[in-house]
Length: 209
Image 1 (cartoon, one colour):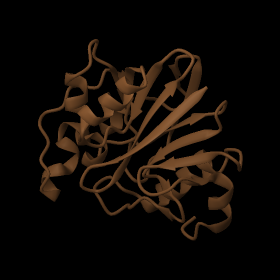
Image 2 (cartoon, helix red, strand yellow):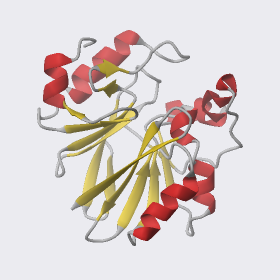
Image 3 (cartoon, one colour):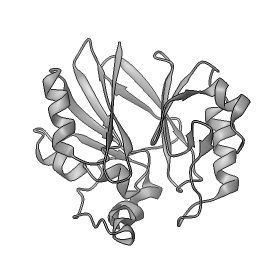
């Protein structure tokens, strides 16, 4: 069974998701936004082992906790990132532009690709490449649990911004239609900011798509 802990962290109140297969204790962190020690302690309190870090995209507010988290884990977790996000990752996620410079981050160890499956204990997550907010943004869909972690692609009643380098309004809308709206209507959407929603709700009420 999938258990999900949402932690809202950092200067832009970014949602970080600590997830685990409760039967095995295997855990992953999706977008370690900030405060890596806080994330580690949440996992430790539940007896979970953080084995993987999955990054939807490399904006600084989604990766600010990576270094502190990795430093506290032994063995070091796998860090999964789409290759199109590498330049942004290496530039600290653009943090310096907003007055939040980040230290040099460890190199990702797993390249994400569209159609790939990530294994977490007994659970499988499908990787869907969904550019538009950034060129390499990926979302993670677990059919068994009926949940999709969608980063800053789509929000409750809104969508991700496209005015930063690498953004594309046309690509964003196409990604939502092809990668999100093709999922079952009851699928929970857990976004990078704000409250959760569902595919069905956004198909009916999202004014941007």
